[in-house]
Image 1 (tube, rainbow, N blue to C red):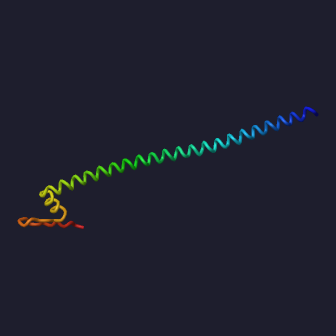
Image 2: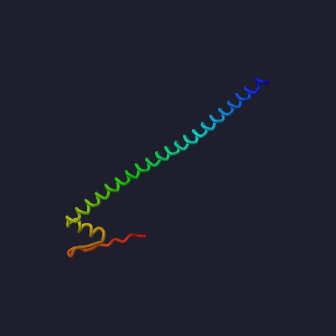
Image 3: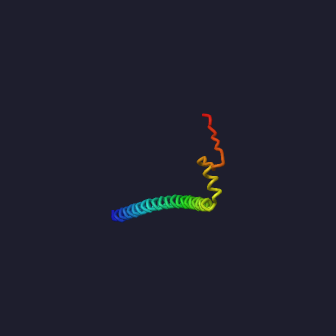
Amino acid sequence: MGHAIPVVARIWRAIVRVSLFLLIWSMAVVVARQALDQVWEHQRLSREVHSLQQDYAQHLDDYAEQLAENERIANDEERQVELLKQRFGYTEPDETPIIILKDY
């Protein structure tokens, strides 16, 4: 019987060690899973930011082109008259307007 107590104590110690190992391992798994979720979210947001930056750059290019076109129109009287004719049906005094109706 004298040997039974040390065996029980060893078994108890082994159970405690295994339990602590499993507790620490499960906590590490939870932390790793949270870190992985954060990495995925960061990658998703990085892709979204990159896409938005490209869209923004494209809008800036379009805006710059429109400003350049407006500047050209402001300095070109012939182009202004041409646009007035195209968009609003403007005619000069010596021209005869022709209106074409669409069939519906």
